Length: 178
Image (cartoon, rainbow, N blue to C red; front, side):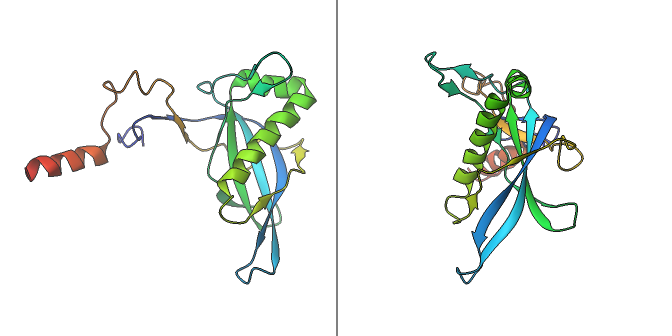
């Protein structure tokens, strides 16, 4: 995308580094709305330098934890069953705190799961808050995929950003017809 000039304005393409992986469950209902379906869900907790570090907000144990969660991608578990995998991107300092402090890790995983739940709010799916740290697996899949994240400097860099190839085609078509 980046080489082709197709990164949308206001976004940056990053390749996060894997840190650790957790497993949970997504509950949904079948098309008849009576059959409850259970599907495994994996969340690759990843490091990305361009995400702001977590910080204590107000000094009373309230934390602001900047993060980005990818759309889910279809995957298979070790038994070949269909599952869904997400990447949750955090600043490396935040991930380091997760490794050092189990309570902080729990807080960050729960924040990622809440974001995944928000993505599923219209589907009726429910993401379980019961999760398990996979000690022998840093990343579900080979490596985390490239992710688009908001460019915090997008407003300042608005005039410096290259137009995407699609934007160029639209501009050229408009110029041609005016």
